[in-house]
Length: 425
Figure 1: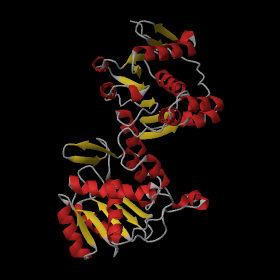
Figure 2: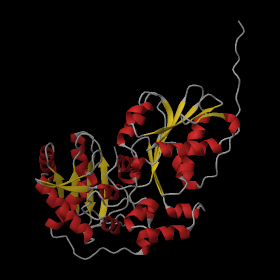
Figure 3: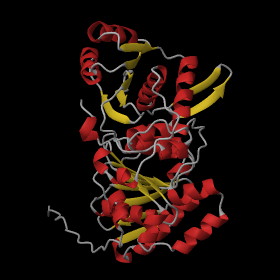
Figure 4: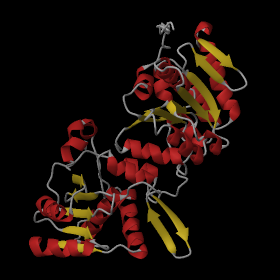
């Protein structure tokens, strides 16, 4: 019997011209790239180019998915990819919205309207388009299809409030979760790249409600989750890391998968030190003692925290004080932090503190006000900051004048928090 010889297929393909932020967002090495992007900023073109190139590197029987919230959006993506590729390298199926490439790989354009219909296939790469409008169950289904192949995914969309899985997943990526990257593309980026005109942006600003405009064109979530601090107030308190020694410490201790976080404020309420780690309890005690030194510290003493505080007091003296969290005590603590932020009594560098403050939320119930991070997110930095602010208030260090920063301060990047400077394992 004659042996069949494999035939090498050469495909000529030219990537569309992408501006730097598009390339960085979609062609990054991370398995998961989360992209919050302005409308009409070129996010769809970037995703299409990435998915096509993934499929062109595939082979017979390998599937590549484009998933949109509804059928008509999937059809738009199918039509644009079909029309953008040389006709000789694919076979299109208009009813199934598939493009079978000459190398045997298949691009499928799917709808997330019925998530149960997405289970079962092995997918080698996927794009989730308009993610903030896609049902969370559809994301769960797509994620399951990537398990066996360990396929990469690009998840992209406009910002649409904070009560959705896409916003939460973006915050995890922004916080540096393994295998994830976070990117943000605004209308200004698109204008600079020549994708859209500035006068069109200004026209949209005049025509749309402010919160809608900020979401669609600047990827800034509206405060629909009930943020207790105020997004503008949070940003007004961003400043350089203080070079003065910490005078007041707040420590939030790790709970299961959470982090132990310590935040030290200087005499003026500026963050001078941020440490964040996961360690066994005995090592945690020694790390806190080494960091805090003789400065007073308010430490979370809830649950397992109680014996930790006792150990700190035995070895470090009376400068360590416990604070037990309950619904009522956490409400008081967070309301005190809200006052400090809104009066600009506190300052912190951009980074994980700001990210957690912006995602923090409150809700009313029959038992009172519940303050917490959204499900699956962390609030360790918020709690540590609130404890430090409370200790400063108790010790008479609170000053009611706003903290002011000069332009020179703002431009000094050396003072801002970076993971390598203050995090240790």
